[in-house]
Image 1 (cartoon, rainbow, N blue to C red):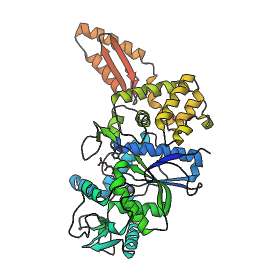
Image 2: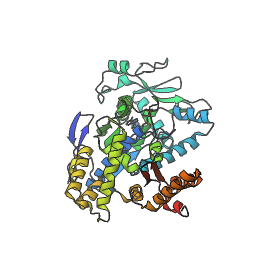
Image 3: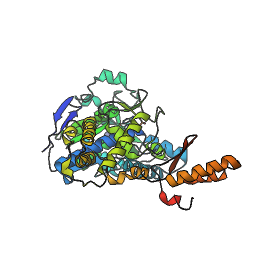
Image 4: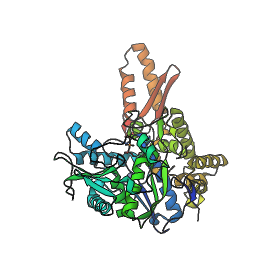
Length: 455
Ligand SMILES: Nc1ncnc2c1ncn2[C@@H]1O[C@H](COP(=O)(O)OP(=O)(O)OP(=O)(O)O)[C@@H](O)[C@H]1O
Ligand SMILES: [Zn+2]
């Protein structure tokens, strides 16, 4: 069996991964708050943990891995969006979840085994909060319930911060009902116009952190193997999850391995909605960047390093995938021919794995290239339409356009040229006209049927 090593944020070193139960490997990843399209940064953890999920399935068997990723569908940002747009919350969250699924699918990521919505686990959250109160780790004040950070001695251990650092570094909300400024909200009251549920503390809604503790406990138990998310969540979100889960269920260890992906950046800053320096996955797909190319660009950098999206990386990934796809066309897929599991097992060294794919290509080993790429979610049939489309023979249309242009130069009537161009573009063809001639390229949205009757 391949020995997997992962860099555990908790121990701060690369540890050999030993599942609690090899027949039931359990992983939880913090999912999105659903009120808007995912930006490219949000897609990075999805791709990173997809590679890990594929690797775990490869090593332990597809039926022996359980991957849970939540949807946060109760949040003040969602409420604000609903008010702004005059729409219902459910409409917005359903629509956003639909977008999320189709955008992430376009990147060749598998759906997790379970995708719980926070609003479906309110009773479990209430039960966990009651438990925390009973054990003296939480208290009620003015309709709020707060976690008492001082009641948990290990608080801050994951991120390695002292309480002083945390107060200085975070925008800790000072509120009159808090005993200590570090205490965080487990439950807050809802006015009539906001989503709310009945609870022992009156009508209200949960804080964000308790969601993940309650859902992971319900679906994966008091101890599980891997907890993932972006490094931006390490503090306070993950620190708070640990405090809640370990205090509510001290008999379990909560998550053994903590895995954090570094940020996708724009000019040195985290791509984020709040900074406004973002573009969505859908923007890229609509511009004709194939999902497989986006995936390939992500895999070129180790998950533990910050990275940028650049036009150069896009062009290189596209050219590479095109030549790889050409080589593996018609080759039989034999999973055991893969040669990258060793690199992936070494703390998901995807950049090393990509380097191996390049050498397999150079050696002309199409079978190993195909099997290896597929283990990383690349060169799959369902992602390949874009590359096939590019091989279409458009020379007849090129000639027709050349002729029409030559005639138009004489007659000064460009209507035929314009009509041809419009028809080609509508069929997903990129039209390049210069003095040197006409060049046509089938784009990812190429649709041959739309060319019928054009010439
Ligand atoms: N720039 C980024 N690079 C990599 N991962 C990111 C980036 N921004 C957010 N994430 C990750 O995306 C996932 C979903 O997070 P969430 O929906 O809370 O987005 P967010 O952090 O609120 O986005 P924003 O900061 O833009 O408002 C989390 O795992 C988070 O760590
Ligand atoms: Zn979480």
